[in-house]
Length: 334
Image (cartoon, one colour):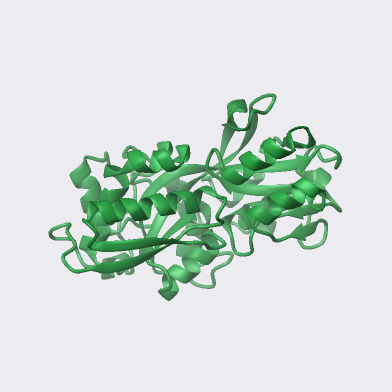
């Protein structure tokens, strides 16, 4: 099973248990050390987020406003719709965007040059942020009560090059299915997926996002008795063979007004930049995240999971030196 799922190096074990990104490699040291933690000249930054009905996009817009507020408009940031994690990192490295939201498992793949990445990517973290919950939904008339039951079914595995697609394919494999042959994979973004679930053209879907996700709320509001959340924790042991960052979590019944709490698989998110970003800019961006957290929470309750206590826990993705200074100033524990 380990080989089939594409194992990642044991350094990933540190992501949840380590004390945070120590800069022992060559890449993060290319960044300039922060001196003043201020930005003097005007800058324009693009934030790579995700689907418009997902939490990344909502929080990305709120974070862009927070950056502007924190810098009195000196730094102008905008949130860009993307396919999420894999594409975000690819375009971050290419220079299309300067900040990127990502699932931590995808970020680990990137720094290790594994899975979707042919070689290690020059990225660094500003902070670990809130957790993503794997939300697997099936139509009640599709005969699907587990991931193994998806054989031959029309299943949305998320946008191409998204973190959702990575987790979906790993879960399908863990359940004994070949994602390329055993399901009719629909590689569609969240909005189209929700519409497909409503009209019956899609039997089941995967989504990795914060709680609540607007698109999933819409689905359960519109198709209340025609859809259900699945308990997918039977795949957890196999997933942890790939990467120890995967954890057990629970989607509370109150989230989507479901009959009961539903166990699921959880993975943290990280906020990324290129490892050579100016140190003062990275410091300002990190402080804006925490000093304006209340504004982010107003945009999405998922932002409640952004905490100084866990901010440094990004290893093996290194913390940017500017982020380290910001977290020192903010009193984040090591």
